Length: 179
Image (cartoon, rainbow, N blue to C red):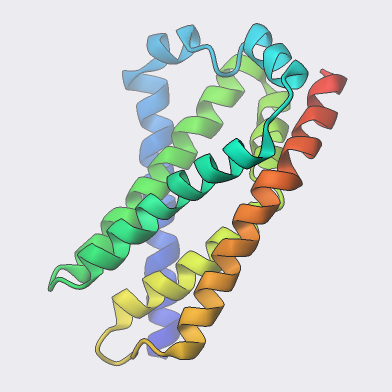
């Protein structure tokens, strides 16, 4: 019963952040979003034509993806771990809401497809890895960290990084050629 309750909280906080991100993008920063360059045609064409140096890109992805992991581990060792989990879920939802709304404002339905494709296939592994970590932090001290969780977490994050480095750029370039 408690697992089902906690699962509802995870989804609730993430969806609340998503909703706040949508409202923020539509009300507070609409002018800023319409002037942003990440979803304009020039930027997308440049991305489609750029050759990506995989070694440099891999190190960039490792650095950018490991920063939240290290931060969560460090802050998760404090007595504010449940608050940290809630803040992380709210921020993740908020960011997704902002990005999706920005994409829709600039590109319409193609923006939704672009956002979903940008998260494919690595996002499933990142979500699963973060759920392992966040679940432990949220349900501590009932849940103890062990070797199985460590291996599972590291494997999921590593698979996400590999897919983001080597599969996602190919999928993105294929999609951008159709625009």
